Image 1 (cartoon, helix red, strand yellow):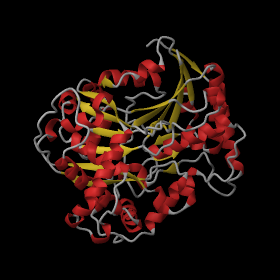
Image 2: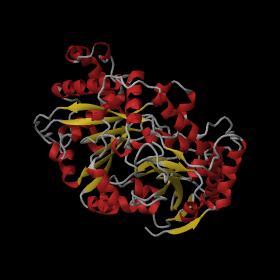
Image 3: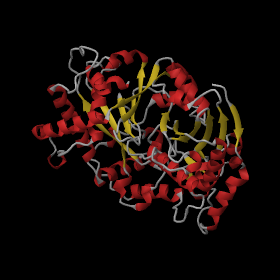
Image 4: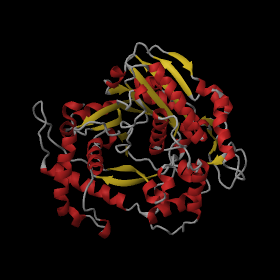
Length: 510
C-alpha cells in the first residue's frame, strides 16, 4: 500500500490553544482547563490499548472533504479540548498507586503526532479493503499501521500517550476517516459519541456547543458518586470480577510491541455476517420456548420474560466460539460489556465520553458432539435440541443483565473506589469476551454533502489479542444483517467454519 503523508493546518499548536483558551473564559474560579485531572476508577478497568474506528465515505471531491473535516475537528476541540491532550501518569504522590490522568495541554505531543494527518493511498480502494473478510494477524496490523493515526504497537508503558487522533485516508474511490483513541480515556460508546459530534460540526460548522459540561467535571462526579456509596450496597463479590490482569499486565506493559508481533503470526481476524431473517427466526423460536425453561432459572423477579436480539446473537456466538482451540469439549465463560449511562438517570451522562462500562459473566456449558452438515447447504431451521440450548444460554445472559440495577452499580463503584492500587481493578478476562456496538448509529451519521453525507461502511481495528467478538454497528439495510468481528487462532478457523451451528448461521456469508 503506497502512501503519501501530509499534515493539516488543524494540527497547528496555536489553533488547539485557541480552543482551550475559549474554555478559560467560562471557568473562572475553577482549575484552569489546561491543568491535569484524574481519570475515574472506571477508566482504569480496560487495558489501555489504542482502538481505531474507521468510517468509509464515497466522496466525489475528497480534497474538499478534508477541508470540511479540518473545520469540524476545530469545532470539536473547542467543545472538548481534552481530546487534544494526553493520558499521563501523575508525578505527585497520591493515596493510590498506578493511577492515570488527563493532561489537556500537550503541545509537544501535538507537534510530534498532529491532531489530523492526511495520507494518500492512490493504489488502494475502499472496496478492496472491505472485501477482505479473513485476514492474517500480520496483514491486519499492517492495515492499521497504514490507515490509523496512532501506532498499533505504541508502548503501553510510555508515561504520555495521546487521548485521540484522526487520520484522513484518501483512497482511489473515496475517503476513510480513521479515529484512534486511548481506551483508558473513553469506551466504545464515548468514541461513537465523538464521531457523532464531529458529524454535526462537519454538516453545520455553526452547530451550537453551549451547555457542554467539562469532561473533568463529569469524571470527578463519578468518583464523588463512588465516595457516597455504601460498601455493602450490593451483595456481589466484585473482587472476583475486578482483579486486573496480574502478571500478564506487567508483561504487556514491558514488551507490548514484541507481544503483538508474536501474536500476529498466530491469529486471524474474521469479519462475517449473519442474515437478519435468521436472527428473527431464532428470536421467535427461543421466546416461544422460554416459558418452558423459566422453572430452571432461579432468581425470582430476575427471571427473564423475553429475550432480545442481542441476547440471541450473544448466546449463538458463545455456542460457536466454545468450539475454538482449548475450549473444545469444556465448559467456559462469556463476558458482555454493559453501558451504565442509562442507569445513571442524569442527562449529562448520556453524552459522557469516558469509560462507563462494566462486564457481566455467564457460564457456557461444554458443547455436545454434532454430526457434520450434509450437503452444500445447511438446513433452513435448527434442530430442536440446539434451539433449547440456545434459549437456555440466552436466558442466562438476560438474567445476568437484569442484575445490573442501581444497587449493583453502586456496589461496583464502591468497590473500585476503595482500592489503593488501581493496576489491580481491571476487568477479569474470560475465554469469550463480547461487546456489542449494534446500537451505535455510526453508519447513519450525516457528515454533510461534501463527504457524501452518510458513511457507507464501518470497520473496527484494534490490537490482535485473540478470543474477542464484536457485534458491529447496524447497517442502513432493510434486511438488517448482523455484522461481527472475530479474532481467532488461525488453527481454529477451519474448526469453526465446519461447525454445524456456524454453517447454519453464516451460510454463504462467511
